[in-house]
Image (cartoon, rainbow over all chains, first blue to last red; front, side):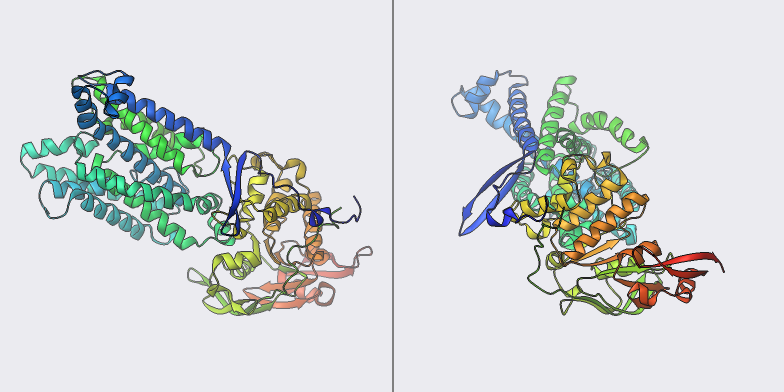
Length: 363
Length: 271
C-alpha cells in the first residue's frame, strides 16, 4: 500500500448505504439530507400493516350479522346497504379502532419503558402503572370524584404510580430491579384499591365496571377513544425522534452520554410518553398490560433484535389487540371473553419464561 | 499500512485539564484536590493500585461523573457547562464495562461513533462514510465489518469498540483499561493502534493496569495513590524504585529495556 496519495480526499467516493439499509438523500433549503431506513424493519412494518388491515376487515365482518371482506369495504366507503353500513360504521368500527389505538399505545409504551430500564420485565403493566390508572379511573366512574373524566384520572394515576416507583427505587432510578419490585408493590396496592372501590358501590355499577377492570374493549367511552387518537399520532412522531438515543441506551448510559445524547432529557421524554400513552390507553380499555410485553417482543423478533422497533411494536400491539378482541368475542359466543383475559392467558407463559430463564438481558 | 490515513481534526488545538477536582461516590471521597493538565498530542497513562480513583478520574474528565468541587476544563470552558453533543465532538470515551446488545455487528457499533456529528435528517453523510471506513481500516476490522460482535474474540471486540471511538473523529481519546482481559498478543495490537492514533495528532489518556505497558507505550505517566497524583512526567524520568513502592508496596530495581529504551521493573519482591 505504501505512502500513496490519499485518493479519498481528491475525489469523494460514492455514498453507499451501510449493509442492510436503504439510503434516501436530497437537498432541502441548501442543505444535504440523508435518511437511513433499515430494510428489514421497513418490510416488517409493511407486512404488519397489511396484516392489521386484513385482521381488522375480518373483525369488522364478524358478529351476529356476518359480512364478507368485500361487503365490509363497501360499507366503509358508503357503498353498502344501509344495514351493512350501520353495522360496520356505527356499531363495529369504533370498537376495532379502539383496539388498534389501545394496542399500539400499550405496546409503544411498553417498548419505551423496557428500553429505558434496559429490562424486558419493565413494562407499565408489570410496574403497576396500569393498575394505578385503573384504580383512579374506577374512582371517577363509580363517582367518588365525579368532576374529572376517566382519561384524566387514569393519567393522574399512571403518573402517580411512576412517581412513587421512582421514589421507592431510590438511587438506582429506572435501572435495576428495585424499580420493578417497587412498581409491582404499587400495582398490587392499586389493584386492591380498585376492588375496594367496587365493593362499596351498587352491584349494578360494579357489574358495569367489572369487564373494564380486567381489560375490555366493550366498556369504552367515545371520549376516551378520541383522546387516545389525538395523543397517539404526536407520540409516535416524538418517539421516532428518540430512536437514536434509545438505541444507544441499549448499550449503556455511559456510551449514550459519551456519544453526545442529553441523557436526562431523553429519559424524561421517554418516561413521560410511556406514562401518558398507558394512561390514555387504560382509560379506553382498562389494564391490558400484557400487550405491552408481547407487542415489543414480536416486533423485536421480526426485526431480529436490530435496534429499537418502536413503530413495529405499535403495529404488533395493534394487531394483537384486534386479534385478541376478535377471539374473545368468537371463542365462547354469545358470551364475550374480555380482551384482557385473552392476552393474559397468552402472555402469562411468556412472562414466566422471561422470569425463569437463566440470564435476563435487556430488550 | 495506516500511515496514509489523514487525521480529520487538525483544525484546532485542544486542551483538557482537571483543576482542583474533588469527586465523591456515595459517601466516599474518591478524588481530592487533583489537578492534571493533559499534554496535547501525547499518550498519557494513568497508573495506580486498585481503587486509587483512576477510572473515576477518567470518567470525570469525560463528563460522565460530575465533580463535587473543582472543574474539568475543555478548551478553556467548564466541561459541565457544555452540552453533551459539543463535548462528544471533542472527546471520545471507551468505558471499561462494554457489552453490546445481541445482534449488533461491528459496523453497527462503529457507525454509532458518528452520532455526535449526525442529526435526524443527517444520518449518513459522506464524512460519516469516510470516518467509518477509516476507523474500520485503522483497527484492521475491514474483513470483520459485518460480523456480529458476540461472535468475535476478546481482542477483536475490543478493537471494534476502539474503532467506534475513532469514528467519533475527536481530537481527544479517553480509554479506560483498553487492554484489560486481553492476552499479550492482543494487548500489543491495541497499544500499537493507540500509538498510531497519537502519531496522527490525537491526545490520548488511558487508564492502564500494567505498569510495564504504561512505560512502554505512554509519553506521560500519571501515578495515582488514594485519589491523588503523586508523580507526573515521562516514564523514564519519574519511574523510581521509591515510586513503585509507593504505588504497589513492592521493592524492585529499575532497568532500561535494551530494545525500546523504556524503563522496566526487575527483581520485584515483596515488601
